[in-house]
Image (cartoon, rainbow, N blue to C red; front, side, top):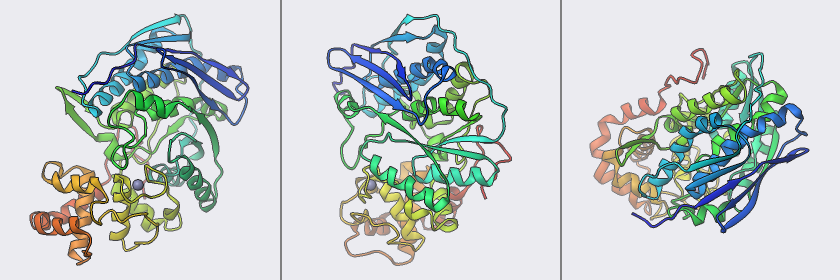
Length: 436
Ligand SMILES: [Zn+2]
């Protein structure tokens, strides 16, 4: 077990003025700062009433980031809100412990300075208006396309949230908006100490190219922070681009079943929806439009049906396509298999030499991971390259795959394709939602 000491005490406050909301925090005597959000409009009385339940979610996010042992909410809240967020917090603490191979830890003790807040939820008329959190990646972009095709009025909102990929994502949404002929809104998310805090309380984190800097629980925060927009525009459906793999990926750790992608899991989506409905809007629905689609299917749809959109998608964990992270590996492979190599310029070929540690991991562990959509996708693509004789001299891992693995899976490549193209049902996707 590693030595990572969680924070003793985290205090979180809440203030607002005009278009901005501030969450000041103190973590022991280590960090003091503010996480702030700037909306495209001034928050009115009704929006201000939503802030306490949003603040409880932001506090849960900050608590997992520093693995706080005690959390003090210095703004109006209630024991019911805390109880509502605890199951989400547990998911986040659990996955944090797994990532750094720590002993699973109990949730923090939580103190409420003003515990008698009664939230005043807003009600919508359930018309097909969707607020889509739009990063400029493949999942949220295909979500936009599918929502529109299904007759939803879509309000895309971009949060400037992803450290390192922030500029690449901003460029992506600007280009994609032009290609798709849509307008979007931006919410400025500002958390200057994020990288320092995260680094202080985590081990396997921010190590290129294996461990990216996307925080656990990010989508909990984004969903809740989008609620003032939902209220402003009468939005019933809050949409995020959570795909089938993230929705269904679980692992067993120290006798406990843990969602690999925390709030992107089905359980996470259901917990967020229950929290929103209880404290923010009883008519709100959490709706991930591509939740039934595996990652390969999503990339396949975008590249074959929307070829003018695909080149502008943002995907690398590190901003410019590095060619060395796991995301780059998958995008590179799909493009090469679909015969559109060169569509995007990668700084390195992930198949060459030992550029991509994740490819090595897939090859070393293919037997135990076969059948999982992520591994199936990589194995399928490698198999297609072998079948085409497209194995290049410096691609020694591909050659190793050809010699050691391909003979074992040659007969099941067709079944793999069926699995990675299969459309699944999902409890948070309406059964009449068309994906074609
Ligand atoms: Zn990359």
